[in-house]
Image (cartoon, rainbow over all chains, first blue to last red; front, side, top):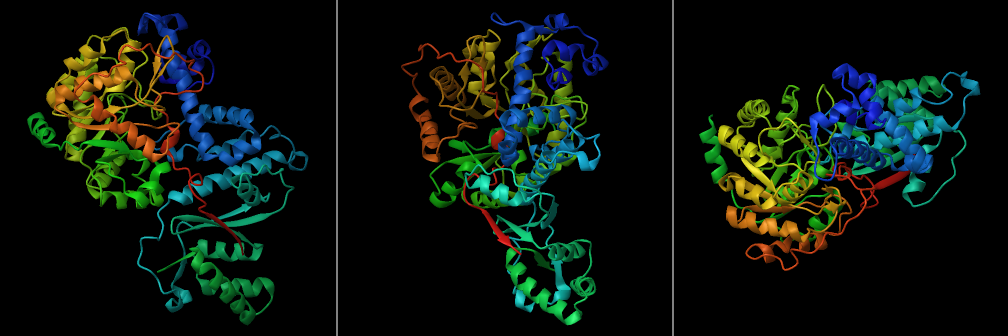
Length: 270
Length: 321
């Protein structure tokens, strides 16, 4: 029953399909022996209620989790991708929170120009994949464990050595400026797809509100160092070397960033 | 612990009054107004992994209202092994928010490692009953409390079923001591879809095992009824509610509204209509149902289960580094 319900083909095609046949080799006519008819519907018609419901219910969830992507792709194309995604990557956990976890990966795996050389590929799939990654990351950070319930910290008294990147701080690198597009859609706008431009983003949370923070490439590299477990001191040293600016200017730059990032939930004190 | 122990626990569960489902769309209203609702029911899966605002809001509500946890992923009828990680999370949250009880459905949601996130019907046979009895016993031992199981809405029945659904539930309760959540709208939907008498269904249930009732709206599609949870309670369901209220002596009752969710005051007002129907039948009982096409509606909608991270308020700030 499950194999038939979760197949995006019609009921008969799903029953004849390899997946259903591997579980239970039945023909569509056999349904009437397994499922009792009602006074108004055959067994097959009754089973079809569940099949229609399976996709309709989960597509609604996908649309809720990828609202901006749905606008970018258009309703019909979004549903086509989401339906195929659910067929390839059906839910395997108790929570719908994981439903969209592999959607960006699926879009990358099934892009129409997958076999073309990179320089010949179309731009729009890259944009859509970036957008899916952004929406998924925002969804995760929104409900991830955060530091809101921890005792208030007097940041002026916290030494650099005690600073750690907050566990919920997500660092993302995009090929397109998807954050601007994302924000515009949530303002109720219908923005055009922007041209390619590297976009670096940190997503954090303060008082249970998401903060989308656009970064310069150097800031992104700096924060990545912290994410990889390096100390602030080590990351500042990297900064000094990379820019050939020397230790003191790097320290000054870090002080400016520290003041800006601390109230934005980038760090926890260890 | 044996069935008698859990049955005694069920008898001690409180009559909480009239409650509402906790929905993300109402978080702000509740935190600002603290409305006079007797109790709230949460969807367990919505909160067991939450480390963000949903859990923060829930903790505040737990200080002011009785709470009940209602799950949709237990899959008690499945042949897959029980998920003890999931059960641990349920147990942990139930303790943290002092959940009055923990409920789920007589159904399976998936097999072979998949989750359809639907409440699928089980064949009502001796074999299935024995299987589910065994699982309920394990679950109750693990959770250290009786499990409360709800009758689902069903759109089909299996040709080889040999036991009626109310008898199946009654025997399950007898053999395990578990409690029952009687969804009177589901009774109406299931009975229409399976050509059964809904009043006879309710009368066949053991009233002393019923801990809670659910009310909800549905859509009549002519050949079948879909349990849409997207509108007010229809008069035939109020009639069933009246019968069940009389039979149970007035157990905790909750209105589900999961799609096209109205503003909180409207939702609450619909719940309070229950007071009119506790002791007498509604006058429009025999009104002809409005028949609509199935297009665009689903049973037991899911989309309300995941938080809309930006639908309620401007919680996104965008800054430049």
